[in-house]
Structures are given as C-alpha cells and as structure tokens.
Image 1 (tube, one colour):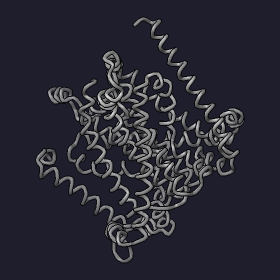
Image 2 (cartoon, rainbow over the protein chains, first blue to last red):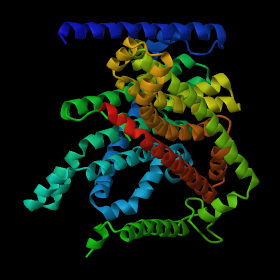
Image 3 (tube, rainbow over the protein chains, first blue to last red):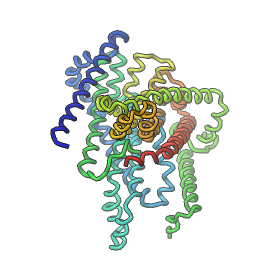
Image 4 (cartoon, rainbow over the protein chains, first blue to last red):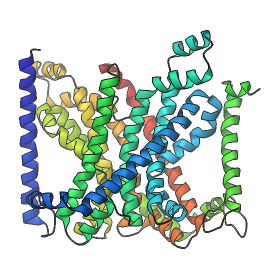
Amino acid sequence: MSARSISKILRGGLRDKIIAGIVILVAWQVGVQTFAAKFVAKPLNIIDVFPTVISDPDFLAAAAATLLAVVQGLFIALILGTVVGVAMGRVKAIDRLLNGYVNGFYTLPMVAALPLLTIWFGYEENARLATVIFAGFFSIAMNARDGASAVPPEYLEVCKAYRAKARYVWFDITVFSSLPYLIAGFRLAAGRALVGAVIAEFFVSLDGLGMYILSHTRSFQHNEAVVGVLALVAFGLLFEQSMTWAMKHYFPWYRREGGGS
Amino acid sequence: MFRFLESDKTWVKYATIVAGLIFGGIAWEIFGLNSNPAFMAPLIGNVDHPGAAPRLIANFSDEEFVESLIGSAQLFSTGFAIALITAIPFGILLARAPRLRVALETYVLMLYVTPMVALIPFVLAIMGFDFWPKVVVVSLFAFFPILYNTLEGARSVKPELLEVAKSFRTGEVAVWTDILVPYTLPYALTGVRQALGRALVGMIAAEFFLSTSGLGKEIMISSRTFDMAGVLATITLITILGVTLMRLAQALEQHFAAWRGLNR
C-alpha cells in the first residue's frame, strides 16, 4: 500500500472522528439545554470554565495529590506484585498455597474493603495509599504469575545446562521473559488504582480529584466537576498510551492481547 | 527435602491447596483473637471475639440480611442485563459499519478508561436517590468493558468476508449470524467477564454513595458500629459471589474461545 493511500485512509478516519465528536457534543449541548435542569454540565459552559479551573491552585493541588498517590501506590504494588507473582509462577508449592487467595482478593471489589481499610489505616492519606496498593497488587501478581509460568522451557534448559545460579534464572530469565505479562498486568492495575484512589477520596474526604468532583457536584458546579473527570480520563489515557508505547517499542514481536486478563 | 512439593501428583496438589487454606485460616484466627475486636475479628472466634464464619452462617437466618442480599442481586442483575442487551448489539452494529466504528472508537476508548466512580456524584445530583439511579450506575460500570471488547472483536472481522458476502448478495440476517456474531462473540465474552467484576464494584459503590441499601448497607452499618465480624462476613460473601460469577464467565469464555482461533 502506497504512502499516499495510507495517509488518505488516516485523513478519512480522522474526518469521521471529528464529525462524530462534533455530533456528540452538539447532541449533549442541545439535549441538556432542552431536557435537563439548569445546573447540568454543558460542553459550552465546560469550555467556558476550563481555563479558570486549570489555573486554579486548588484544582492543581488536588490533581497532584491524586496522581502522586496513584503513582506511589502503583510503584509499591508493582514491586510486591512482581516478587509474589514470579515466586508463584516458579515454585509450584507457593502457587498452590497462594493462588486461591490472590484470585479471591482480585475479585473482591475494593470498595467493599474500604470501610475495613479506613478502620485499619485511619481517615487519612494512608487509607488512600492502601486502597491503591490493594487495587493494583493482585492484578500485577496474577499476571506476573502467568508470565513466570510461561517462560519458554528452552531458556530454563540452557540455564540448567550451564548451571546458572538461581538468581540469574529468576531475575535475568524469568522476570524479563514475563515482561509483556507484567505490562498487561500493570495496565490493568493502573485503571483499578485510579478508581481506588477516587473511591477512597469520596469515602475518607481526602483532598484530591475525587473530592474535588464530589464537592463541586454537591454545590451544583457541574461544569467545574466535569473538568475534574476529564483530568482523570487524561491520567487513564496517559497510563494506557505509555503502556501501549512501551509494548510497541520494546516488544514489537508481541501481539496486543485484547483487554488483558 | 521439599522436592515432593514440586510433584504434580493429584494428592500433593490438593494437600498443598488445603494446607494453604488451613494456614490462612489459622493465621486469621490467631491474629483475630489477639487484636482488639473493633479492629479485627477472627474466623471462628469465641464469646469475647465474635468470629466471621459463624456470623456469615447466622446471617442467612437473619431476615433483614437476606432482604439486603436479594436487593443487591436485583440491582446487579437489572443493571448488568441492561448493559448486556445494549452494548453487545451496538458493538456488532459497529462491526457491520466499519466507518461508524472508526469514527466512534476513540470516544469509546475514552469512556472505557474513565473511572466510572467519578460519575457517581453526577448521577446522584441529576437522578436522586431511587432504585433506578443505582441501576444506571451498575450499567455504566458494565457497559463500556463489554462495548470496548466487542469493538476489539469488530476490528477482527475481515473486510474481505463482508465483501464476499456482498458480492454473493447474502441476506442481512445471514451476514449477522454467519460472520459478525461468530467473530465478535468471543471478544464480547471477554468483555462480559471484565464487566462482571466492574459491575460488582459499581453495585457496592452505588449502595455506599447513593441511597444505602443491600450488601453495601450491611457493610456500612457493621463498620460504623465496629462490628468487624459483620464486615468480614459480608465481604467474604461478596468475594464468594464474585469468584463464582467469574468462574462461570470464564467457563463460558473458554467454551467460545475456539472461535477466536479462526483469525489468528
């Protein structure tokens, strides 16, 4: 396919996308104006308040607080989850001991555990951090386990043949060959962590984007609150895009798996 | 010395799994008995430290709790059913109309990554405290994972197939039953599995933050009165329900996964 026809397809797709976007926005604006109460957010009003919100120090502080908690929690969850997951994938006994728990906690909606976490960690920022770690840990551990048990046996045989030390087998072979799985798990964990942070903020009334949205909807400033939601979407897309980029850049030979586990 | 633990014999496997459960139970019990009852409850417990397991069993003869359970089940099934019957046909329709699919893909992705919890305050402000706002929350949580994955399937429909169908003047019904559904269904089921987990989160979140009801209310009341046995019993019940639903969805997904092999 020639370069020109590719760019033609791209441009055609882009035009359709823009038209669809405009149709959605117009439908939203007109629909809300005719049917809904006055305080409900409308695209034009959102555009109107957007610059003021973006330059509002309270908003920036809230966004920074949420993002920091999510990044911090994900970092801890990534390290713990990789260690536990790789151990589960490599040692059958550990897998059998822990798999039921990891699966169970993965399925448990973290909202349900929130009252418990607030009693254990107090009504403060630790509760949010704990929720983020709790939300991220299990999906990373599950994927790391799948990755570690899917190491091609040839690699392990070569290790054995050359009498490689256990630490090389674990860190140089297993962790690296399960990287695509880890990235899939991390992508999943990032989404869950963001949700966890927002829920924790609702529940504990911590300063952050969740609280920003909650307090502005309560005072019927929905347009401002929508900007908060947009910031969350931007964070979500940022994580998603950076993972897709990492996959493409470092593991071009792996096909993208639909949605992860 | 521990070599036998690595063997794949059935009895070794099940013995380790059972041992894991027993170890976990004992650890929970010891931790629970040695901490403040307002902080942690043991599994079985005694008079001073009421346990979670007896509480879970007692809950089933408690009329109020059973009512909550039924209320939650109604909320979950209504919300999930609405998401299911809207998202899958819409996803397949987008497979039929590739141009529309390309136009909408980006927006679906954006909504898919939107943390839906952030929309709960809006639902509350606009729709109020009834049963239906909660259904809307559950549907919102479940809708986009299903739609996003069905779209992924729609992308896997080969345009050649649609072209061949067109040149043989295939009827619209046959195009749907023979091309679109078989290609998108396995992906849609992956979405259904993801959506089950998310809808469960949505259900509890709706029950917490909108009008409190159902299992969410049970957790809320127990935690406000520092009745840890009650909190842990309800959380355990939710986990059991979640794992069961997940297993069912996984079995269904596996059953149709073979269809996916066609396009790899």
